[in-house]
Every structure is written in structure tokens, then in C-alpha cells.
Amino acid sequence: MDKLIEEMERYAREYDIPIMQKEGLVFFQKLIVENHIKSILEIGSAIGYSAIQLARLDPDMHIVTIERDDERYVKAVENIDKSGLKNQIELIHGDALEVDIDGSFDCIFIDAAKAQYIRFFEKYEKLLKEDGIIVSDNLSFHGYVEHPERKMSRSLRGLVRKIKNYIVYLENHEKYDTLFINEGDGLAISRKKKTNMVE
Image (tube, rainbow, N blue to C red):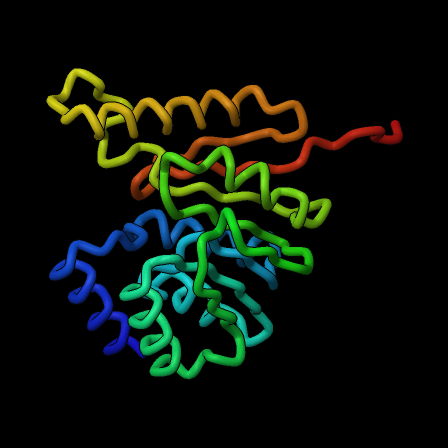
């Protein structure tokens, strides 16, 4: 398994595929164990790196993961086959804004097109179990979000603005409490607010 992980990390570097940074992944894995998470919906499989790393935490873990890019999807299928975790990971080929998913999940992991984070959140949060969490990755976006003075192309500036809008959206969401974590490339952990609590 570790050989496969190393191969995937090397492939991601070589072909500039965004995979989860190690510090963020370690934090996420710990969060999953502490919250007894057994089901995850991942939006943005890339080459299957995070799905494999999360599925291997627990033989009872089940992950549904969505990838729209053809080449990345094919590579993810190959990697999941090699991992021996095929019975735990269901890979869906399609645009996350267009596919329909059934079921409910302990965790929803958003790690796809940054400009669409609000739309992903709004589409899929209804599938979250009552005590579940939504984890969003790349909210620092390589430091550009915290350092707007850095030189950026027009398209990058637009993307950074959309990430900032998403952060504000989470901060002001009436149904969720969000904790922002400075691990990896910046994570947000969103939990449903407790309502009608009995004193």
C-alpha cells in the first residue's frame, strides 16, 4: 500500500495533479477517527489519493467519490483497483453539480473546483447526517487568500475572490458553525448548529 501511495504522490507531482497536502490529510484522518466517521461523500476524486488514504483507516469505511475529468477518473479507477479497497470506494464519473447521489453521510468532503464551493455545499449538505461534518479543503489556496498583495493573474485573482466569498458564506451560515484550521492548504470544518436543545 505504501508503495502505491508513493507512486501516486510522484504521479501528482509530475503531472501537477492537486492532491491533499500531508499536514491537512493527517489532521483530517484524526478528525475522522475522533468523530467515528464511517461514510464519506467526496467531491473531487482527482486520482483517488485522499479516498484511498481515508478508506484504509477503517474496514467499515464507505466512500462515494465524484470526478469529472476523464484522465483523472481513469487513473483513480486504476489506483483504487491496486489499493484493494474497491469494495469500500464507489467512484462516480461525472460533474458533481449534475449527478444525483442517494443516501446520507457522516462527512462530506469538498475538494473540487474552488469557484463552485458554495454550489457544492448547497447541493449536498442535505445528504449530511444530523451530527455530521462538512470539510472543505484549499481555503488558503497556496497562501494567496491570506496574501492578496502577491502578484496574481486576473483569473487567479478571480478564483481567490471566490474562495474568500465562500469563507464569508461559511462564517455567516445560519445552519452551520464553522471552524477554520490552518493545516495543509487550509481547512474548514462545518457542523450543523444544535437547535431546540433541551435545557
